[in-house]
Image 1 (tube, one colour):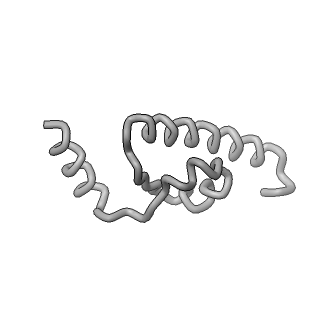
Image 2 (tube, one colour; image 1 turned 90 degrees about the horizontal axis):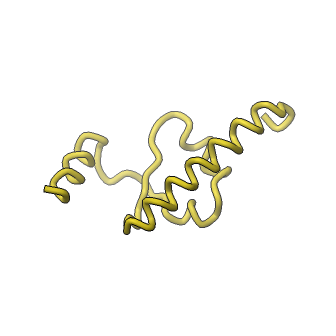
Length: 74
């Protein structure tokens, strides 16, 4: 990917978007955020160091996490 300028642009733009999203979640009070999916490990080094500090391993499956989040907002 280092020699592919188009891939570099795509990764940079994706990382900027994800960083903004993580920043927004942090402003809402979320302190631990998990990236999921096949590209999570690839994109993580492209994120800002501030955004990376919020990242952690998942404590629950996606389904269990959704249930926990829903319970917090009922």
